[in-house]
Image 1 (cartoon, rainbow, N blue to C red):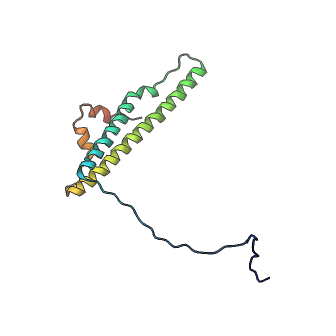
Image 2: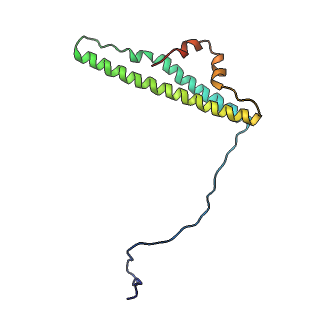
Length: 137
């Protein structure tokens, strides 16, 4: 036998070879109106998260209905879940603002303008921006 597999037999062992191909990269582009729309949408989403964050502050102030250990432990667990939920809301709000800023940077670069801070511009027109900035978990 010469090392060649017989017809109909299964060849076992290391199989070597190579593949060749090309890598193509995709691309996309946005026009001015699309970038402005994306900024608006990201900021609206951040506002929704912020509103939920403000409306959910009582979740960390849960008090058990009685003085027994079970009431205290249930209240403590609920407050812990509340803190985690507030952290989730705050992180998502901040992520949305970051995405809006990235879109704003792209728009400013596209238009040849100095970069602007989208969060500061957005908050400048809000009547409750002092109240919002002081809230922490």
